[in-house]
Image 1 (cartoon, one colour):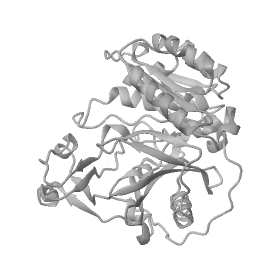
Image 2: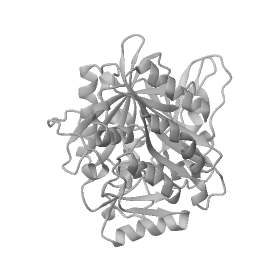
Image 3: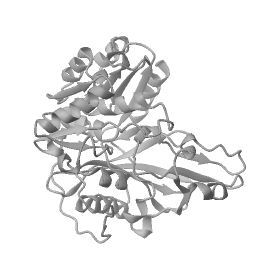
Image 4: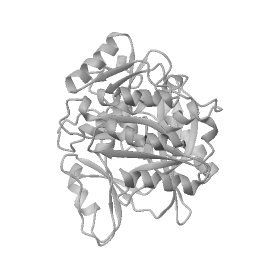
Length: 402
């Protein structure tokens, strides 16, 4: 399927920002934020990641139905989310495994709800007529090989799409480069980028063994790294939600965001980000999105990635707008904790920090409530306050403790 994208989009004025999924998707929608199971099964053992992603929107769902892993519906967790004032989903359609997941999707369709696929699902499970946006569109928007069709040439990094046969020549040891998977499957966290520094040994990631197409990008000396949070509501207009800054580890993987008191985004880059989201909206996209962009050491403004789905940047912003709008312009940082222990133990251990204030539980997941034999709990939090150094110190202390 081909999509025609105009790079000369006329923008509409921005309206008030949403506080829950209901404000974005409108009535009659069920959100399904779980990536599909890989056809090969060989890319990664990302069952836990898929389940966590499905449960992430629970705390800000409002009246929107959420097809979510049962691991995110622990009663103690839901009580903490409600105690924090979040608009916790009133219609949680939980599954414990693959069979139940498919059943929940079909039940939602049977109830007359349209499915908002944040990741493409098979046509056999969710046909296009039952979807807010088609699987083909979602896959195309999130494919690393499609970015240049949405981005004005002024903001494009130098990138090349190569086949597996061309991969060895395109990834030499003596040069620095960034390798990304190019696929419409849009697996989210189960397919990561690969950063290579010149003269280091080349170690290609597992996805190069199962996929046929890849993106090789120039290695950029990045000074500022922003995550621009936007949304397209049912009226088809792209609107800016907020500008955040991103924490990225040495491997190039997103580890959290900074909200409030961020480095100002250049006006021309802000305009381009809204225009990109509107181009996607004109092609039929509805929902939340996050656009990763950067300023390099030599002053270039570059679009790095387009993430047309609910992200770990949009959830904290909806939460803050819902319960602490006064904190939107103050320092805040998100953090994810993962432990090999029951979620209840993790929550209990955090009670003193929660009671002290400046900490908000956003989402969580416990595999013990699913049929996954792995025993692991994940908790997503937002640390906020008045002093940016103090907020950072508390975030680092939480990461170190767990």
